[in-house]
Length: 186
Image (cartoon, rainbow, N blue to C red; front, side, top):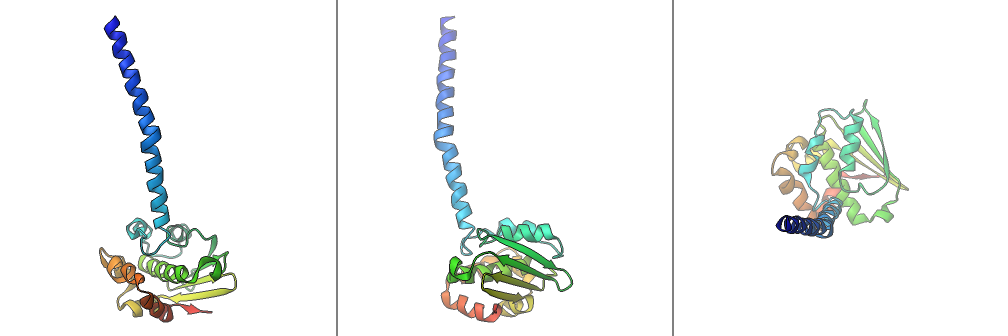
């Protein structure tokens, strides 16, 4: 019986040690990794495009799909609402902040990235109107396709996104030229 009690006590000690390791090391590490991933999703240069492929849809009239897509793209930390105009195949995104509050560089990359992603994933979407406090921008599918020289849907194919869209956003001159070509600021 003495050996049995020692064995049980040993199991209890091992159990407490494992519990402490899980609670003190593993769970905090997982939480930290999740925070780092969430922060990376705010930046078009580090955003995980593969994670939003599940929102690929033929029709922009699926309000849940459209709102979930934009909630998974950069700038999702800015409070916003949506309006869909199915007759003109247009999505309107109403941001509750001004351009100055967001930061122009972050905003330019974000709008280019987000609009290109939306056109690549939603087949019949033709226009996106971004409204901010005191400013607005409009992006047309035809301008995006002209800029990239391909149908928008092909940008979502394996390897195309990183090579043709995401990696190019590092270059400030590229961002400036792309902004002039596809963003109609009003």
